[in-house]
Length: 152
Image (cartoon, rainbow, N blue to C red):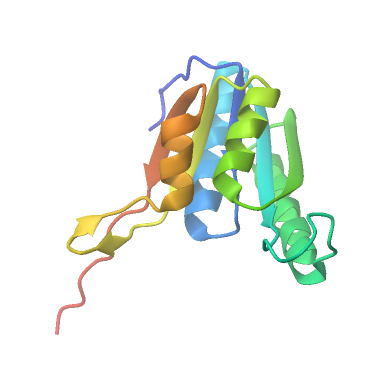
């Protein structure tokens, strides 16, 4: 998708460490560089309802730090300097991402979506659907390709 210019000055990219989120972040870096946009990556630590929101969840926090470190490496590889990466604590990722987009007055949210089929159709999942239905800005999906069938 080279040559595509995004009409956005502030781009939010939720990241979760899966292949789709890394691919979309790399693509968002390229778009941000071409558009001279500010890029913000966010990792959401989902805290179970039975725990206080401030609870220390070491494993999730460590994973978030690893993912954000990887995001910073990708930004460096893509020669993008204006990147901000942070983590949030929330009960559910979708509402947290929408609130982050509102609070930071983002022009676009770009989401990497893994290829999933359920009951014969592609599905977005609850987080992606929530963002699509509630974000105050543009929402752009980048879905992984369908797996190549294995021929016997």
